[in-house]
Amino acid sequence: MQAGVIAVQGDVSEHAAAIERAARAHGEEADVVEIRQSGTVPDCDVLLMPGGESTAISRLLAREGIDEEIRDHVAAGKPVLATCAGLIVASTDAKDDRVDTLDLLDVTVDRNAFGRQKDSFEAPLAVDGLDSPFPAVFIRAPLIDAVGDGSGAPINDGDDVEVLARWDGDPVAVRQGPVVGTSFHPELTADSRIHDLAFFETVEVSSQ
Ligand code: GLN
Image (cartoon, rainbow, N blue to C red; front, top):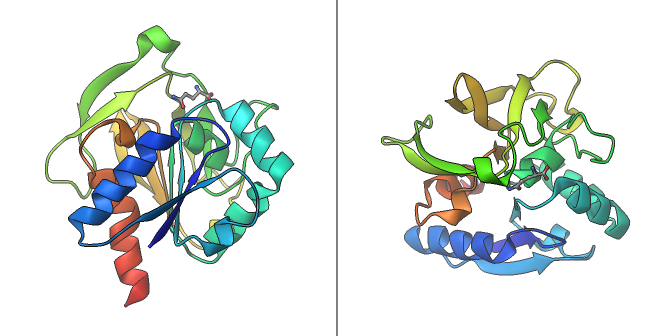
């Protein structure tokens, strides 16, 4: 399995380690490639969009022409896990002109809704499909404040947005078609279950 980690900016190595760990647990080998330029995404089976700074990430994706490749990847039904800033970039609306969103997930996000760095925290989170709480690390995390409001995610038009987890009533993990987005950072814990949810279930289903 070729796994591409979007590496224009953000916490790349943690995602690389997490997908390798998750693949091993499924008896697979993840061949991880870091993506800084166009031309590689079309060879990837799965993509990871890390946390970092969404304004910088979206600007660099557009400059390198990687944005369209990611959209094509999703249009082909191939899985993506987008975390934190990655979720912001994957949304349809980040309510901030400096973020050119990719419209992969029909959600509106509130950047830095959880406050600044000092407001980062870890909490056990109930996630649909997991039989025990996930240790969710929130770092200057976005909140999802509207889901499938009709503003449209053209790529996933036929798929509903499914809320997988909420914090204080607001969605913090969602799935739409092949794309899973989380406000928190599953790559920063040893627990690979979010990567499992995002990749291995989808990959197994699509390869049958
Ligand atoms: N709040 C940051 C942004 O707007 C994201 C923070 C993160 O990825 N940890 O890009």
